[in-house]
Image 1 (cartoon, rainbow, N blue to C red):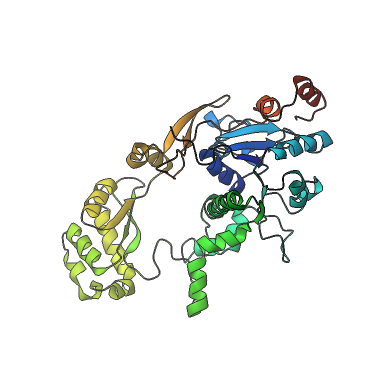
Image 2: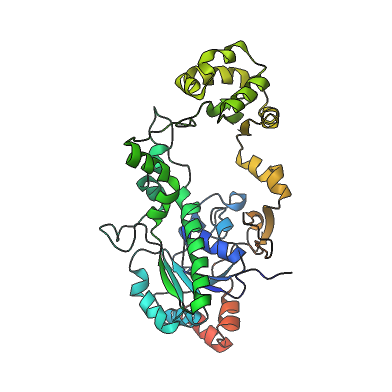
Length: 406
């Protein structure tokens, strides 16, 4: 079997919560050894965030923490102790990448700034993820994804026009734009190091990654047209029909989007060419958009008598863009995801068997896989300290007695 592309790469991982752990999970699925540093004195907040396995709270049972921390080794260190900092410095000698998403200055206070780490490992790739960058008037601000979503315009644009902004329901910038940008930057930095022998410092301002992917088009619309886009619910700025429609049964909906006149003709065919649909005011996209309220009401009158899955199959078969609205259970049971092996069940020492997702990436010449469940705090202390860092059993025992491995 071919080796993963990051086989042999070691990551010293101080990241927590969302964007950082998802990035290192990406690296772990590509074969890197991720050493996740935590402390029992202050567990990561997601470990204490529901949902919990079997609804029993516990730092090793969070379904919020687990999926983004598979494929990692857990090392517990109390970084308030000088001996723990010395362990980190030894770990850095075998590391290729060090990553954190702490507030500005935390790593500096531990003597682990980029300038400090370079003296230990000159070719290190060092990553910081300040919410709004290392410079500028907001460089010292803290933030979580919900705040960054608001800062980049995503919250303003999400929801229905007659209601307050609803947001994306989850911290979208944490989950997609920031890890996506950062994974790409890390791969580029590794390639640069392979070619030149040089490491480098990567600063990724989370808000700026968010602007790139979440609100780039609305920002461009304002820059070019002076138009401030507003919340549209599930509608499209230019196209109609483009919405969710009720279907037969309880809490069943279907999304339908028509992008051109041909697709409109196909939708009319599936609807049985009703008389109202042949009214000239619906003949063009401009006309459909101008009469969108009436159009949506007519379509929903039709979809309400249909089962959503059957209707989706009929529409897609005729070339109409359509998809049922999935619940979380529907997603885990989705035939296509199951057939592609996207889901896997892994055995966790405390939580037992739990569902994890594989990477969405597929590489033709290298595996990308989830192989081990989320790490417990300090679960791999012995493996990391003895096998990787070559501490003796006596030295490890002394660290345990002094509370260094807390």
